[in-house]
Image (cartoon, rainbow, N blue to C red; front, side, top):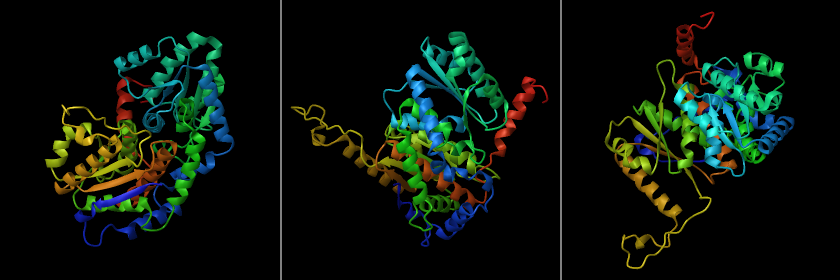
Length: 421
């Protein structure tokens, strides 16, 4: 299960510490459905709800994709792709098709690069969109669907999997007309909270992840995170980051020493940025990749404006460790490390960085799970989602809407001449 280490943050708070009373009130509002946006809290039940027939359908479709395709093109933007990409890159499953993510932008160069990456290989498409009208994925779906139909003719429809609204919308209409196999984006779950639904589980399963283990671990994590106590790690994280925000720490940096965590950080940035950044308030979510960024952004973090707090995600055990070798003559001066595993060396580096940043005025919170695998991924997803909801309520905002996202869309559609705008 997730553990939170607040030893690097407590020195920056008042003697009373984090406000666990406020965290408890926020948790109660969430659990009783009395907070803002309560109609979109179905993510708490997703691991339990998806087990059974829906998970069987997901895994059966994933098996067909794996049997027939060298590539799966996932078309989606924001919450429609970030969770799946985060899981695939973190877990790095083997023996599945390559997964290409499209529909995340409108760059022609990026599109051509993806088409070249696809080449002439056999492929399937999973298009993920609640409505089907968001321009970026809609444009990409039109292009990739055209390639699929040109390559397979009438058989193309058996290679398209639509994850969309259960009853309405442009994509649902197309899927029903064409006979695409469809999966549901739950009505009571916003996109950034949807990774443990078919939105994320189908691409994860197709890529070779063990989604049965993942969903089981998530169900257990959600149960444990419902603990109404300061011992709840979600309370600890939510209350501490809000206390630091009140002390002027306006920017939170999420860091990890695992390069495969990069898209987990991207998912986290959407989750917290879209949930909390509204009504003129909110902690700004940023991310860095250590050790690499210690030699670039590390300067700013150590000596820049003291408006930062830092959360470091770590894994207790590497999948496989590697021992530093002994070299005769010690030409590079590294024999003092000989016989020690890189995992141990990395942990020492992490503690050294924490000590330096805390001394430099940057509060540090640690978040850890046992391993970088399906269970660890599920536990991190559930932890960050629960803490995000509690933190948003503590901040006084609705953590489940995103009114600001529509502003650019209205301008874009009007300027492009979309009928009706």
